[in-house]
Image 1 (cartoon, one colour):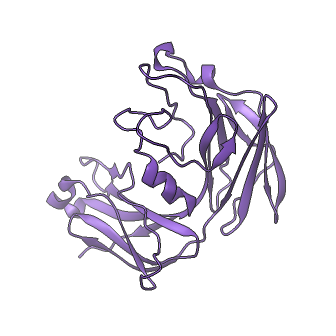
Image 2: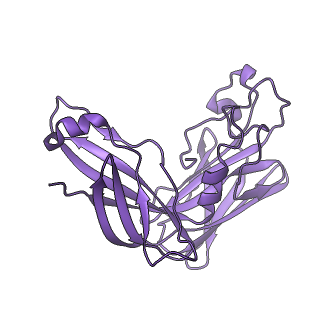
Length: 255
């Protein structure tokens, strides 16, 4: 999922190259950790560093109707953060305004509220969560298998198995599952603490998740092969995600 700011993506060298501005930002409910990444794509044969691709002269700010304007400043490597503390509130809409080389960049996202949790359990080889969904929110889940013994390794799910939303013909609840948890857990379950991490994501994330593989077999979501990827950042030669989400950590009681 494209919610971190540390990844640098490249364009495979055997296709025509077009440079894009790449925006990556996440707003996490009940958090003050706000970092927006502005970089540019590049051909793989150049072997550039994060410093090389950083956009260091972006003018940008985040605005919300309830909290006002928060100017962003460049820290390093193309990562920008608010000059003044910005506490992200669940249920609030935030807009990103930026300008780079005279071109405007824009995006908007709403940080979802936590849903009502109806049930959480281990079902076969994965964890399942039943939630009462909120409007215009989608849901995904990861497992966390924490070792209680230094002789055993801990595991955290690296990817979403699925992103689920309420359909018009469904009942009031929806089910969200993780990937299969490591088989080593079942060999000594008493050695681990098990948690499900529920992600409540702004609705447009599902469109990104559904299209993120369109460029296969080219191993890069910023290339031109296979089809288009949904982005919610707009601007000339600009792509990216500016996404709000809220995390809920749920302990799993396993008998």
